[in-house]
Image 1 (tube, one colour):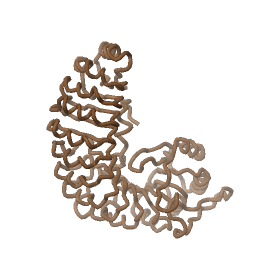
Image 2: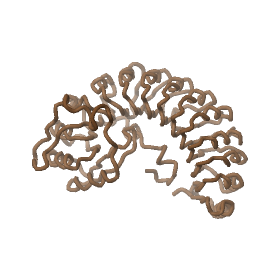
Image 3: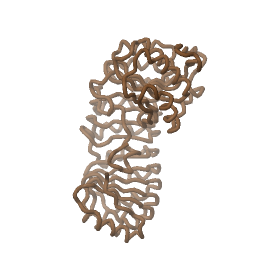
Image 4: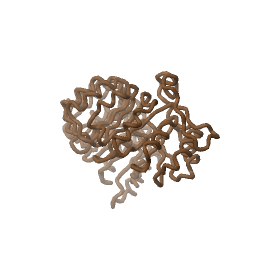
Length: 425
């Protein structure tokens, strides 16, 4: 997904809905449905929805629908070949929605055949269309197709028409932006919502209160939403959250106390960027109870070895990003090495002294190390230590004007050919 070729990027820099929705973005909602569709030989007939009382979810009961596969993407692309575009997996807040990217806008005349082809393909998917090209009736036809549909509506009027459809009470995943975000009360219409993304819009205060009613939420993105510390209080009600994105807000360490009790989180993105808080040892103390986390960003020159002691219990961590941790010594890196599942470490900006990396020697599963800003001389000074990390296979470095050939040879010789120094593409 990322052009820099980073081994760390695919796992922890996943595309967030807020990154895809600008401040003036049209309304976006993702629908997860189980509705009867076209008969295979019905030609141009419209799909007929099932009685909502008869079907509760795509898998029955309260279980979420299965995630799509690469084979599903190929099958969907083939089914919709006459209309152009291609299907691809989008690993975001929707946790693996299959999105069909169109090369041209759909026309109303296309919709009946598209609906039938989607039914026959039998693939869970998301459909991203150009805004303003279809009538409300066409949106209704697509909304009646089984599995997942992601629709972009041009205005709130069209979306409200869709909310009146019999399947609206079975919606599980949503992305919203534009006019609807001024009235989150509409979330009460979706008691089964499990995934919610709110695109870069200004949210604060009582506007967020309806979120407290979404007790089934598993994933939530509020990135770039102008949040302040007090706004995070509503999160304490969402104890089933597993994925949370809060990057690009006006938060400080004090606000993160509201996240401390979300112990089911396995992904918490407070990625460095505009208005993000700089971490301190106290910040990490607030996060210490999040022992199911699989990835974590830590940024700020004020983090010390004492602060890193709070991540000792995060034994599920596979990815760790360290931004400007210049005060961390060998003892702090030894704490990092003690994380039993850790496979990827990214070092951004100013890095700890070379001697500190001696602490990584005991990391049992560390395979990939990436430096965003380092010179060949600085990396060479670490060779004595990093060559002894037992499973380290690749060190990614900046692809600038520096010549990495000498240091690459040094690492290859020190590790018996095991470690490769790889300039990012």
